[in-house]
Length: 336
Image (tube, rainbow, N blue to C red):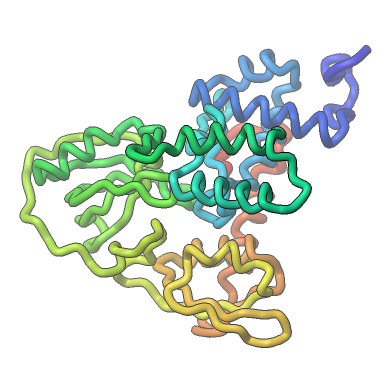
């Protein structure tokens, strides 16, 4: 018998690693389309035992999307009956290049074709011609998936209306309801963000629009404020008005993971290591970042945050111990 044999009483992990990965990607692609589905229906669709399905989803929740920083982990909320997926827009349709990426690819292709012996009429040349035709000379169209509440936030910002939002934070149990003054909606690093003054936090915050579950009019307007300098950068990441400047030291090979988070110049420290300044408003975020960077990454200063990675790891371990693994016990499982 071929295929998933878990229904015949065999262990659910008899599939090879490649087959499991292909199945998991198929599950995530399906969740990207539907957003939410019951565990029973999902297990039936993919011919899996429900407990094995939950185990695979919790494994997926430990993964992320480019650029693989802690705020880009897959958001999968699993309870006893259903699974809800957030932030899987990249799996809904084939990836699209931004104009800058398109020009970079075209330039690289041109350089390859300039090498003596290259086939000027081969597949690369054909692909380049199509790419250059798509880029055009007079006008470039960029298609970006629009989150559900994008228009409501834009309208509120244009009319200076206070709104109440339900926001899914980056940590377990981080859901909150907030009154905010939306000043603008921006597209950065391939995502939409709402720059707003949060009355709950008493300061400026940059909210990822995909994490906003609901927007409600609060029936009031606000006076425009001056945006802080930290929200004027070229990248989406902003540490927050009360952020702490943290110096991290790590292997130079991990630089791609922190380039967009750097709050200043990245310096060489010798022996293949670099020192990166990062502004952090949330110690939990710092802990997740250190876990992503690996065991050789460390906090240079302030020393009070040197255990941020251990605190996050210990908290995750306690949650798994309380749940007793993925054996189908009752209670809510929130995977991030």
